[in-house]
Image (tube, rainbow, N blue to C red; front, top):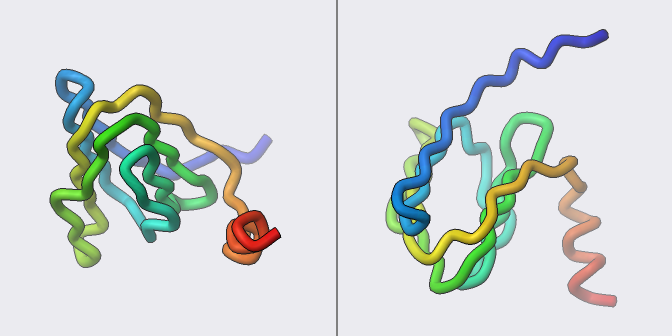
Length: 88
């Protein structure tokens, strides 16, 4: 069994403020979802009126405000996969 040594801290305050570290890239962003590349996974934040209020590429941190309904880790997809879904 392979041990996952990836460590990430996420914080949600009052379901309207989200912070995370170890963010490699913002893959998708609109007012209803933010998809982040983190280690070997994607972190999906779903909700409404979402906006990125802070993004630090050196510290690899992000802060998002809005109505947060869900935070889900998913398998990482290739960028080609994301764009191929958009242009079908």
